[in-house]
Length: 307
Image 1 (cartoon, rainbow, N blue to C red):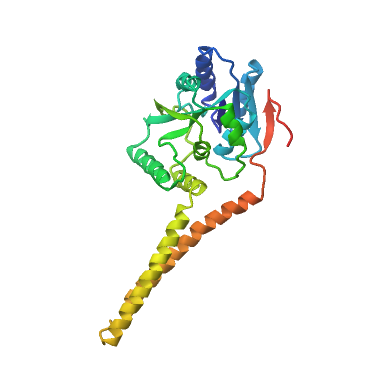
Image 2: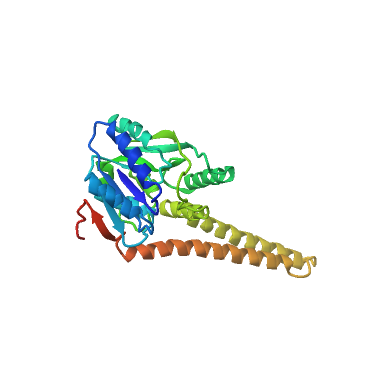
């Protein structure tokens, strides 16, 4: 199990109880790898105490916050099981769904992802925004990304090995794992409301989430502006012909309000297009720098190979 954590000291004791209760009912050997994204509370202290009592629990801490995507990436890299399950430490994804994920794995599926059928505790407007975000991603993405599927999933070692061959810095793991292919299936479940602590993903992060997903797996935004630019050029040519016709017949309108409006629209469209292009160029720049995906400052019950 890979368990990303960031300032979850209030959930760690309950995490241990629930995870161990479920694992104890299953006839498999488990390891529990907690990836601490540089928490500033007692998360690390509590997990290290568990590691001292149970060698199956392992702990690594980042030197700083490298984002949740990198927490999962580190977990996939250092996990040693035949199958790997990602479970967030906030416990909104219930551990008792794990046996159903494992059951599908035993049926021959390589990727088994949880599909959220309900989000109790979230306001209706947020649920609508999330649903719209997923549909927007699916529309723009060149990869079929499952709707309402989060990071709560099981992957086989073969999938893990394939994933680790993808070394991009700007990553959207839900899309990246969907892009890998293999046999995939969803398992529906009801997400639980958070009981302790605060969400690490405020609402405005949804905008970054959407753009990151789209720009990671689609060139459609650039293509759209190519067609819009062509359409605007064609419209301007037709407008010039029309105004020339009116001028020749002495009926051209006085003033230039229409010209100003067209100019402002063109400048706005051009600025937006340049901004989107800049985002893609910036991503390329960050990729070619080839900096490490993350840095580990501490490890307990696990050997981190030197790179």
